[in-house]
Image (cartoon, rainbow, N blue to C red; front, top):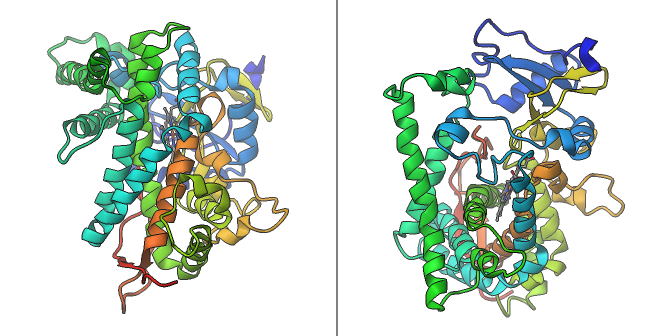
Length: 465
Ligand code: HEM
């Protein structure tokens, strides 16, 4: 057994807190990489309170463990507050890999969001792109709001066959669901996550009362769109969607409750991530006009000199735009540490012991900035993916996570990102305000990272090419 082996090296931290105080106010993935360099080991480990964390800072370790040893590394760390007290352990993001439902969710999502399934949503996506053009024209300064609306509209269509309206109650419900979930899972906020015995304390204590309130609210909020689909289906005037298809599937008979959870996973997985990538894209186009021009030239050619709007069907011809998308995902990773995994058994790797129950964090950010994979990693340059025979790995193999937890929305993301990017570039020029200094490109440090906004100008392109 690996029992006698040492743990991967790392900072010792202090009694009770572990390194949690050292992680306050810093960007975690940058700190992990610094520790990895300091201890001269791509694999490091430390305690956060009493929880053992192992961080994998290079692509080899991430691949060897998360992609290859999937029978050990596919679980999620348990958040007692969220999973147990708020009764959210069954969401697709949190379900234990040891639960047979995990496999069933994956199947539902993989089928419902496959490249083939996506094709049936192309008309809806193309329509959303047209609306985006109009929204940009009306008020270019609110481009972030327009992007958000566009993404949310299409998720609601795909997930439920639902058309959003102004000030939509489904959107408000979905946003509140995401907000409460974030608060209930916030690392370090709930001691019961680290000392589960605290859950047996009396129910009038504030954290229990909070959990009870959230539990009821979450249950209510996640039922709203699902109940709506069922009602529509009963009246037979429904638009086919991810949810309706699963519900009307005769064989194999599916459990309704699981369909509800899977549907909720679409909004939870898609909204913030796609929005983050799109906003990074718009800002990067302003800072890199040469890239923008080259992408525009390609789109103009595909659309016969802008004789028509680009659509989902054009993505096969947009070779340079695909390189731009890859570079956006590499340069501005949406999920810098994916989502945490958990080791379900003790394991051994490169002479180190990885304890059972360790939280295993892949440092995707460090991989995207690894000069041995991507020379001059701090340069934003889609050209790196255009060179024939380029040995650089496709950043999508890291951007969407790992192993049996890999993002099931990858086809959805690809289709929609390319559509929105080509639509914006076909209709608009993005620039920086005149006389402004080149902006600093910086990112927020949440689970989904966002570029910190700066001012850009968005102007309609002249009609003539
Ligand atoms: C640019 C867009 C996106 C990025 C960068 C992204 C990235 C990720 C990452 C890093 C994970 C965690 C993987 C892991 O734990 O190793 C994940 C999980 C997930 N994503 Fe995405 N995602 C995106 C879009 C989407 C879309 C469009 C959907 C749905 C339509 C979606 C649905 C999900 C779901 C359901 C999971 C949970 C999988 C599980 O825990 O088994 N994502 N995504």
